[in-house]
Length: 441
Ligand SMILES: *Cc1c(COP(=O)(O)O)cnc(C)c1O
Image 1 (cartoon, rainbow, N blue to C red):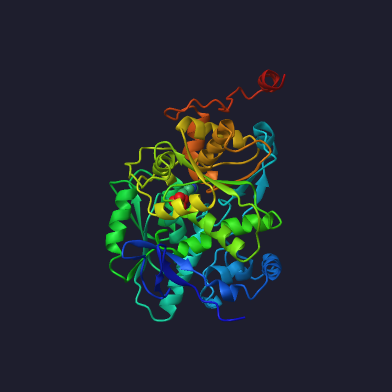
Image 2: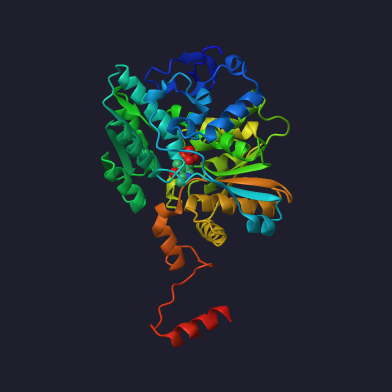
């Protein structure tokens, strides 16, 4: 097989390229993507790729077993294996939700549980790639003092964990008082430099972009397209779990919009290399109504971005009014006949709670996706009998304030229709019997 090598290229100018060794995040204002020349990848047949990826899934080797690094040739082919920093990311369960499917009249609904991972969100998928590459650059003599990101909580948790594993200093900027307690304490525990700024995510993003003009501080936000390479395995892995078939729809929550572009990029590669063929799945991006610039654009026929000041939402990780990856998301919606749907605080909360009654433990962002799914079915956009994969982006355990607030009926603007109150009763058999009689009949 020929030497596989990926490089950066501008998304709107294929001849503007940079080596991955360069510390560069855009090309004259245009976003970059990591481009994989297809000819050498095509030297292996689609069946051989499927067989190879299938074998590696059963390996006991930590790098081969990783959902990301088991697909190393498609992700970051030139990295030496010994420079990979893995925390066992990927291979997230794809669980059926048969009661949801039946209730909505769909043939199949599955949840891709990206939150069952080291730091509890899909951000691990991208961060393993970015930190591994920085580790490789440092190991080969690059002068990089630290990796830095702005975050709505999960990016900083992932960066701090992978940087700590690699022994690299991490700097994280968080909007003060706008992330959950679990999200705040993760980077603290991992020894990152945690800087809380009195602003929102978009304000933090501005500061980190200025800071990383200094090339010895490496930008770890998803504007850095290396992260997208890891995150794109989410669609590849899902399709693999479905026996190399695609569902009719993917529903995914979107904030900065890196993840939806990653989902589409993974699909692109499977079509380009013949692992998928025929009808393409459609993509629905779900946003909180409090922060829905993509929905606004979609409603105007994919009009240019009008940045918003994002309002407070329980889905704090997608509270973003000026999404960096907007142009990539628009391209993704065009290629996959996409739609965008916004969901209220009330609807996202009930949708998450309804999912939990089927055995899940959904974060509010997954609630946004499930709320969008219900609304799109009601509108007839997603039609009866279709199959849907919902990307669940984080573990509910990171959002205990959301869960307790819902069930205690304390969330502003949320009716908590499915609240399950804890019964506080006298410690006697008679009192328990009374209570259970009332509940079970
Ligand atoms: C980051 C994040 C998102 C949004 O992903 P984008 O790439 O910013 O669109 C959604 N849900 C959770 C839990 C996240 O951490």
